Amino acid sequence: PAPPPVALPERAKEKLITQIYTDPGLPNPNPTVPAWQRPTHALSHVQSPQLAQTADYVIIGSGITGLGVAKTLLERSANDKKVVIFEARTLLDGATSRNAGFLISSSAAVYADMADAYGEEEARRFVTFCKKNLQGMHRLIDESPPEIQRACERRQVRSVSSFADQASLDQRRARLKRYEAAFPADKGLYSIIDKETAEKVCF
Image 1 (tube, rainbow, N blue to C red):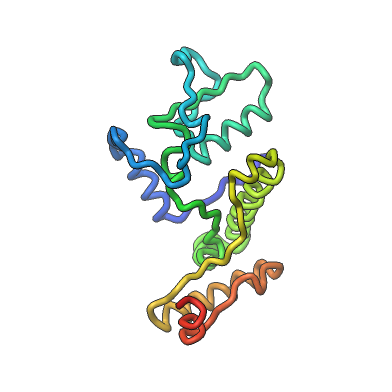
Image 2: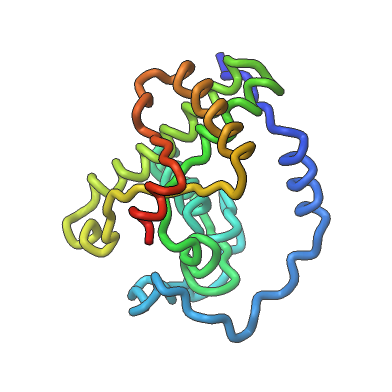
């Protein structure tokens, strides 16, 4: 049986609906070059000699989402299926190559809100999906040829969230406690430090 649909927060639905009816505008005719595109990869300007007249699947955008969908379709569909990707600029020239290269999830921060709005089970499904997504990206790199792994320059780092007032920190602490209760295997993955320690470590 098909899994139940994933519920989205109302603010996320409103944003998606607004984006659907908003004119995206024309691509900048002279865009800046993303840092991750220097030097430009040989595949960046690959293009079909002519526009395909038919296709089984059409994907708009060659970012990580579009290429991920294309890879999945090609691996799981019959060999005679044709996948076409439309890209306004060069491959991976949009948001995917301009996000500073971070692979990160805000699951711990939003879990409590998701649980309050849609229940613990739905919130756990959401977090599990996010975790699998990150694991899949690492697996994709691990399974790539050595030259691709070197080009990815992957490294594990720790990210830092700062709070301007005690109330915000206390709220995040409470949310983290709820997250760790739902995902005990992640206990200890996140740590909270005080202002004095942060100043010594970060400055």
